[in-house]
Image 1 (cartoon, one colour):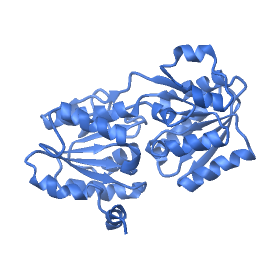
Image 2 (tube, one colour):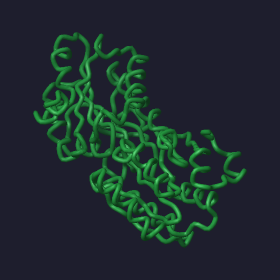
Image 3 (cartoon, one colour):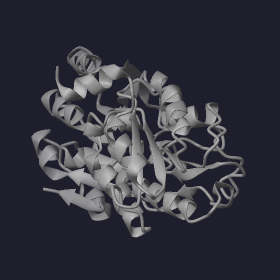
Image 4 (cartoon, one colour):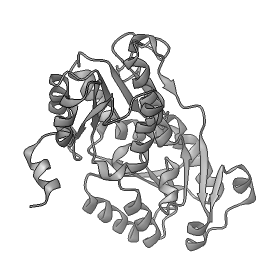
Length: 326
């Protein structure tokens, strides 16, 4: 049995190997929650740690981090939250929407800094963006509110596109419900035909793409959330294999070979969480820290993928793109 499998079977957080070290440190301990696995987030995790370092906290030196990766099983997040709280962590980092909701539902009695792409006020995470009012604050990167822009960019790239497939995740229900609602609202004035596909495993993702052979859409929109982000290479490869022009929510998909993306940079959001945790460790209260909203959005185009799909990117898009990957 592999060591990693052994840790997972024990049912504890992936941070168990750090527990002994955490007890030896004289500095604070922060808890870390995420619904996925560590494999898909090396760059954001580096940004998170770098932000903590810039705030004066270095993991393994004067700070310990207890990691709770739910291994794509959001149902584990409540128990992981309770476990981290029982370790008396100073701050809890809830690094995606399922983790934020789990921390809220569990009424974690410690400061919580969350990251989410849905409306944190509507989700009940905070009373208001300017004045969170409780023990939760965090970062909102407005993924859902950019849906109309994403559809518009695709139609500028492929003027005749009217039939859109939308990939949703059955694991991250909150993000999927938000995505469906936002896509339906944005597509209505454009008179687009929509087909929603729900997936929860790698095999279901592959099967969804295979179905495009029979019912070929003009374009595909990938829903937001960490589930798809962790599978960005698989999504890019399948999009290329089946020749489907695909719009994503973050640039990392395009760097992995996807066609184009429009949205905030997820690594930047992880960095903001780290900076807020640093402020809280120095005495700031979550209730007094406004929810950070992404203010810079970027359009990224993979020109090589466009050529593979036999798509000619119009000059109007090339001129406004923040980056064109050759």
